[in-house]
Image (cartoon, rainbow, N blue to C red; front, side, top):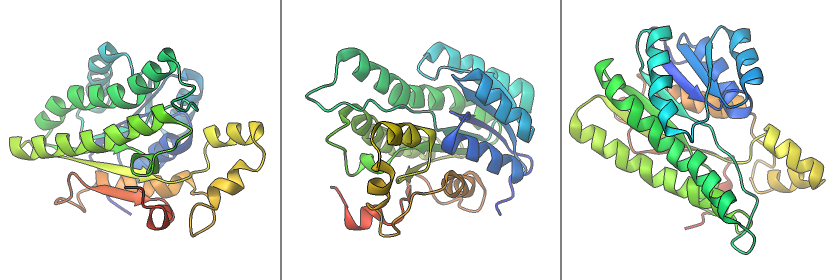
Length: 252
């Protein structure tokens, strides 16, 4: 297991799914963690359970980001790790999507991730550097025709992370920025979709040669590795946790 002792992290979207699993994993690996989520009750319950700090946050509200980073410094003493995990889906094709849905998905998934990086980088640099891990999706490389907003936002996160990584490297600030690309994962969003479309989980699982959904803890393990000092020469990289799905559906 990576040793994250002495490191401090912010994890967004911590109330469920990959975010909750990431908070659990980083704490287990020795990090001090501030979890954030728009669902304050569930987020706080998770953080209280594992011994992490919590603050309510809508990542799309860019003004909140400076406050969140300040709270992290106050509670944790430093900031070495940022996991931009919060995200939403639209479920709308280009033939269906409305302006409000499009704007909200990009505000959360893309602008929220950008604002988090922008607010955290100066503080992380002062803390001696660290790691940013942005959560994209296989739709960043093989977009869904049924969800234009989600596909667009995750594709943009993938490319933006490379821009951030190269800029930080050129600045010499000791900050690495990498992307984790999860495949189909057993999350609350997918469970809700299964209720509306019975059989969806099985169909999604079948997109992977492993013929199953990922456990959120499996993605959290990849995040913990990228957050650690075990990969000091990895930046601007993409780590696939997709059960081989993109090996047979490579997209573009």
